[in-house]
Length: 120
Image 1 (cartoon, rainbow, N blue to C red):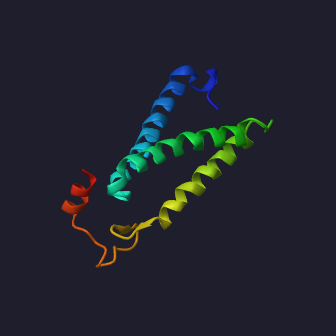
Image 2: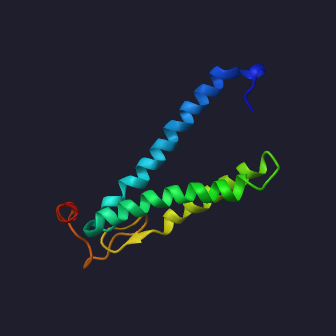
Image 3: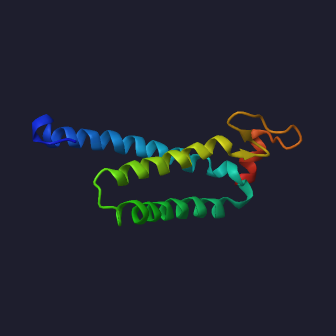
């Protein structure tokens, strides 16, 4: 915990800026894959990703911070919640793009030009 004895508000501000940078990078990765998910339905996928993030924040606030009186436990639970959902990325797979570990099937693979054209 940051207080006046170990750095005060300048250290707290520096940590906040660093944390914000990493949060923005994480959000960028989430929105960066949107055009590739279902290029024909770009608006719907964008809306679902945006609404999902907002709903996730409401659920996390309600579930972890409203009813738990301990000061550290809500943060531990929230960290577990975030790690669980981050690990689901390992299992995401699209037929035309493949996944993190496997290539797409040959019959479903599209050249990048076709994917970009379908998104327009």
